[in-house]
Amino acid sequence: MIVPQRSIRFTSTVCLAFLSLLSLGLASGCRQACPVDDFPSRPIKLVVPFGAGGGTDTYARIIKQAIEEEQLLDQPLVVVNISGAGATTGSRRVKEAEPDGYSMLILHDTIITAEISGAADYGPDAFTPIAGTGEVGMVIAVSASSPYHSLDDLLTAAERDPDTIGFGHNQGALTHFAALQVQQQRSGAKFRLAHIGGGAERFSNLKAGHIAATGFSIEEFARFRSDGLRGLAYFGPERHQAAPDVPTAVEQGMDIVSVNTFYWWYPKNTPRQRVEFMAGVLQRAMQTELVQQRMQEIYCEPIFIRGGELQRRIADSRRRLSQVQVEEANPLPLLPEVLAALAVGCLGVTLALGRGERATPTGAAFRSRYDLAAAVFVCTVLYVIALGWPYQFALPRIDYRLTTAAFVACCGVLLCGRDPRRLVAVAAVAIVAPVVVHAVFTRLLEFTLPGS
Image (tube, rainbow, N blue to C red; front, side, top):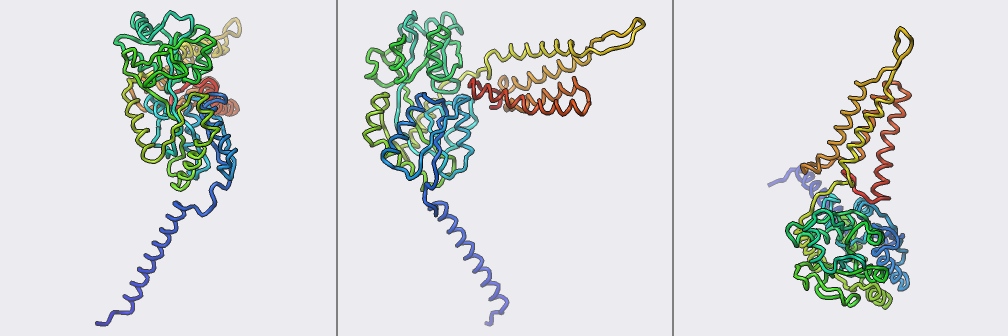
């Protein structure tokens, strides 16, 4: 049988193309699994999603110091503090970074609670976990002059006068979940949850009497205690040596055991070789005398987990924390009242400014533009609904910046008419104002605005 020359050429071409594609695929896979460049070839950025001087920042800088002193990296490890929105501002920055191994995040179980509470629309699955390098317990505390001496005292008061006992927390973080876990131990008990922020801010509010109770890490509790704190319960499996007089929640008949693990994260799809390399660096850092000594000083258990054990720890934490019944809070304190005042204010301002001249037999007179006032008022009502309805009916959230930009633009056009010069100013305000307000509330005040 004679095979046509054309068929031979066609078959050869197909085989050659197949082999070329196979070679390219293998080369690409090799480049992904085995980067050709020496890693790291430039500084690695470590994002701490809290302010400088806090517990997580202190912990990160201890590890950084050990890495530098032992020369475990050929390039600097640069700590960058990006606080705001209950740690989600910083974590989102790493989530959206290039998965090349040069952007890293340190964040404990808050990465889980933020997703469960709705403070963030992502969780551990949006990252590649590197390692877990330590765990700390939490203490529920009140001021030294407080009438509450146990969790039972606190819950009795919260049951007798619901929604009046202030419990300070960081929205979507572990202190938020600690308040809910305690509250759910007694049917009818309800705290007045107050989003305050970090440990130092909560301690100041506790001393000033603005809140009745809050949660602290064991290190924070030990540091603040001499300045007027009383511990009601420790959330570990047994009493902690730093506070042996503080009973566990289990001792008080409450099934609450919770520890906070420090996790290190890379963006999703970071090459496995680089993940393993950094895990090895962290493991060697944890074994240094410096870290072992400092972990004792801050009352942190110096564990180290990676691989399958790490995945199981994260899954167990998610399963445990997902059992907490999360109450949907207003994204901003007193949001309905604030927006109602805004609506009334818009109406008043429009009535004051929306006056025009008209001719009368006795001369010029003013008339109020009630139609203009009504239009602005309607826009304000729609704006309030757009911000609030996702929280009331579990609908998809609308980004605060987009909603506010649309509201400002509509009101601006109504008030300024179609004058091109005024429309340019309206457009500038509509673009800039929502972004500035959003930045102030989420980054400086650490509130969570709709859609953030």
